[in-house]
Length: 64
Image 1 (tube, rainbow, N blue to C red):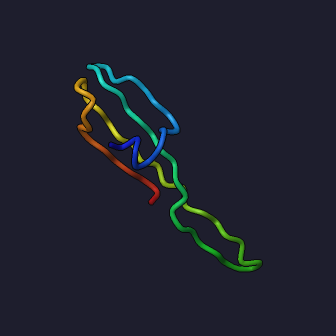
Image 2: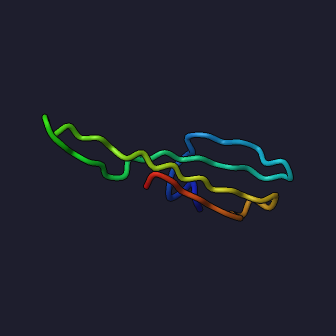
């Protein structure tokens, strides 16, 4: 279900006890500021972990 909603992950890694960890990177807002009102995007990292049974077991995110 994650792949249907989010597409293919930006990175994949095998987990020690089986399953996989998928990583996605997305732009989530940002800031503009002086002097030239440059836009600095926030890069959001989402990590989704799957167990041996291919079901999602955990997730985390940062920078969002």
